[in-house]
Image (cartoon, one colour):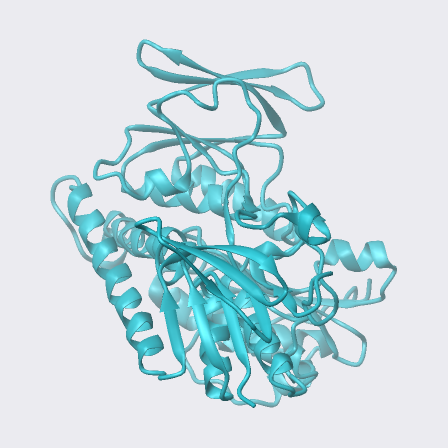
Length: 472
């Protein structure tokens, strides 16, 4: 008998799960109240990367004299064209996903708001207010994603206090931008808009809290070199309206110090929270709270036959590619397969202009767990391709057991988000550092730095001096 499965949310978790289910022969109902592709494609990952490309180009033009090229006059930023290009990129990808979904005869998309009635029923409401039901479902996958978190700060509701959703719709570049938050979202926007012409100030308790501390420590002076004013270890007290814009007042968490930051806009970038709309947790017997739903090792909620993936889960990594992998896993599980996807090892990236990427444990996590490890670090300054490209800032750092079993890889520098894939593959498949060493890498290429960092674990790196203190 053909299984009937419904999915709520057509973001990177939902639409991927829908396609995998369809490939395995299920009859699929995909419910999405807003846009195909979800927040990532429409209001997050993709739009910011479109802007990041322009910011990188602006930075290259400013540094072009080092490469023997001279541009006369200041760089002119066309905010409307930035907005138009972003929309072109997003529309092209949304259309592509929509056409892909339409190519499966066993996927039907419903542009509706969904309400979970029970483990076998969804109530739908379309944009005209018409209601209908999806009944006798064999399984339901919840994948509504998350939305920007608005903290209870005095003045946070003032005009000009915005989230990333609003900022991405601006056709003008703000002259002065205050960013509250030093995580991936806050630093990406700070890095991008500083290069596009804003004077950016960041106020935050921490910088890239989940990153290896060596990375977080190194990124701070790079942000300051870019022109961004960073106020670390500060708690925001209030936001006030002034004659010239907005004022953010904050105090140091340990010292008797205060700062007052002036801006035309204040970007609140303090993370995201799960979208629980349409879910009566108590009435349905769903275990969870404002942080998300509780699930078992197969992503099934406390309501049998109802699964949750992506940002909707408590403790979620809030990464699009992780939601996609979870979607495939659940789809295969529902269809009676034994999924072989390694969900424990996944890369995480920050798209500041000096990119950051990591997979596996940080050095601090290994120390806290009492795990013995070796460390090897290779600087891009010793890599020919990085030097040719004028992008020699940064390094690759590998953490491994004595036998070379990979524990974690951390990258700061050019194309970190691309380079981390090799380390993620090796660690997820248990290949070990030897696999990186024994694979011939093209020359000149940035990927050579990965092999050199791996070789440094055993004093085999050709362009790295031997170290005596690798074991920690």
